[in-house]
Image (tube, rainbow over all chains, first blue to last red):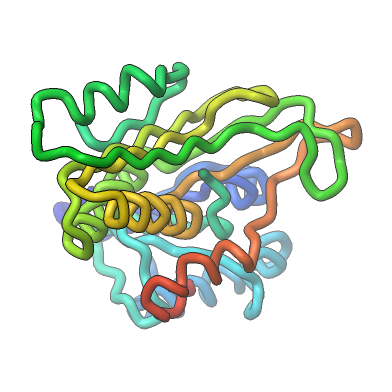
Length: 91
Length: 156
């Protein structure tokens, strides 16, 4: 879901993370140095509280960029939809 | 449509009949059906809710089906996964694969469910006597998927 007309990145939180953060989605304008999945995770963790707990290094968090599972060095660009969620448990 | 996410139940016989209808090259149909158990982690489960990530779910499932088709000589594959409120004994997921011979159908069916369990964005929340809890992912599921190609799981 690209929204290249704006500088915002849409964040989506699912399952336990949505409940823990108390929100399902938000739009952010990341700082200039937050250009990868790993940097975004660290930036969100720096909010403290539940964010620091849930996104602490070592906690199992999956991140998808535009509906594809991402790696730590996957780039994040304006207009992207970035989802954060726990390891999946379907099937 | 080879991939469906739906709240309503499915009829296995009808789905498999549709999957192979009109194709005389089909000599084998393999199916996996996942159902709701009444016990998990030694605690009784009265009901569960399945959540997913609309948009990504369909893309992920279609990608898994495409990977199975690229890897095995199969004819068609179907994935139906339910979401919403479910009770013990309810059907959760159906994977159906058709091929000329059984070996490809069995292998592709197992591959699809193994990857679904580690790659497709579904989450189970169980209602127990002690309250609601999110089901934790199992390392054994990652190992089951990894044995197909040895790749490591993506990490955020």
